[in-house]
Image (cartoon, helix red, strand yellow):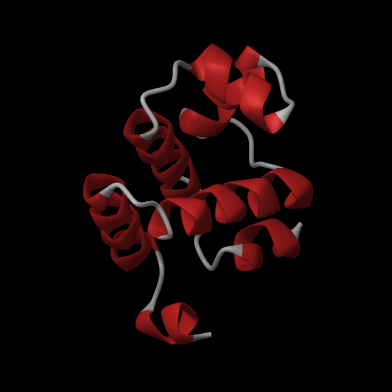
Length: 96
């Protein structure tokens, strides 16, 4: 589905890399990250390994988490958020 690829402006396997990096930044296991998003552990595993693409709802939740990190009082989390946004999104999308 094109929406999956266009929603965050990145495609697999970059989505899997973003999910793994976000999860590790939050210091969450795949199980805990899955619980936070309301999906199963195997789902997170498949996303990270490029065997599946997150649904539009899951992508929106991931986008919200990334935005929340950028607003964090923790400077390290804000920095990681900015690094991820620069790494995975184009400058055009960051301005939007």
